[in-house]
Image (cartoon, rainbow, N blue to C red):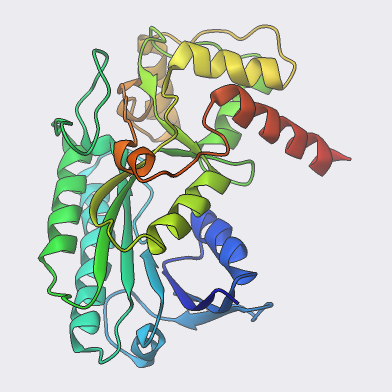
Length: 312
């Protein structure tokens, strides 16, 4: 085994499942910190915590090679005051708690990666935003990201290297944004959204996992790192790519006014669809990381083949 212990805090969701499966074949143990117990499978063990209080789970961090924090309420909801508070609390409270535990741990994790969001950058249609020259945006989702990263870096963990991983839309069939977009395509509604000119920064789920392992093995990398494929594309191209890969020649477009009505009906915000996220992973590229799915065509072909395999 290449690694001893990998800990995934809040790892019972979609991305946590991807990471648990990825690391289970190369680590002695993968520990998921979750609110509900799960049956142990292979090298994957679930340890119960509430994300708010110290308890027996704290021993899980001892001697870990890597801690990945995936905690956070899904932002795919209406921004009511109640939901806003839950979005903030579900990110800040577990992050502060993990920091306090690491401060007191004799043999703390070597590396701590907080999965944050590439939406921290401004609406960009003019040029890509990277870790070196990117401009921070405005609005509720940006304020969440800023508070989250501030909370993360404020924790005193001198023996633990820290990375805030600003991740784009993760593409996979099991969950996340992609299955919902694919359903629109299958229903004939997979055209451009809004004017279709907004950029979408994405990453294939396998590259998301590979990039995290890469960061673990490159001790010179720390601070904020963008985790998106280098091929950010406009929304109309993205939707066309899905239609092409999944054999749909036509997709009805959804103008902004219709999206606003639909967002209210399904309980979400149009910002999640209409904001232009043009993000470049400069630090990963400069470090020599090679994306297996760097272009949208290759990523869509892989997802289509996987989908066909699942259906057979």
